[in-house]
Length: 233
Image (cartoon, rainbow, N blue to C red; front, side, top):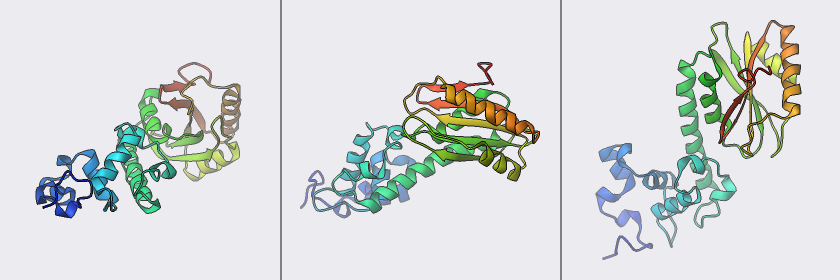
């Protein structure tokens, strides 16, 4: 009889209660470990490792932390022997769904009154990018969020947002106010001179359409920086 600890053992030869799919069906998803849930996504292993072994290897790449795992790229997932493009895409898609679920739950109840009301929502959406992205929250008259959209993507050190694109989308969304945001992959929260100039340009242009720029928030792993809180908006 094959030993369950043997890495060459297929999950299908495990005891029924130890198989991730059957365990989830019988006990619910909360009963499974992170590696067992990942193994279900991976679906199957290869001749040297089971799906559980592959899942554990992927988790180790993120230091067994799902937040860190969410920052990895498809190519990084594929560094694990036995993880091809299809499996990497499945894992990345699941992580993105988790991120969106967290953000959507916050979005549904958010009325923006101050920077902290929205900073965590923004961090959940854009802090994991390894390059700069610039996004905009479009708000209605009740200060509830109509929509969040990433307007532009850049490099490691910066991105450029076109005020014309932002205002066109604001009019399409019937927005009466905006919250600008971008991330700093370096972790440094201090705005650059270019950040300040762009904020001023968008604020002045928005006035012609009776649209208010409420804030510009920079997010990173270290936290957030609010232009409004700092009195520079």
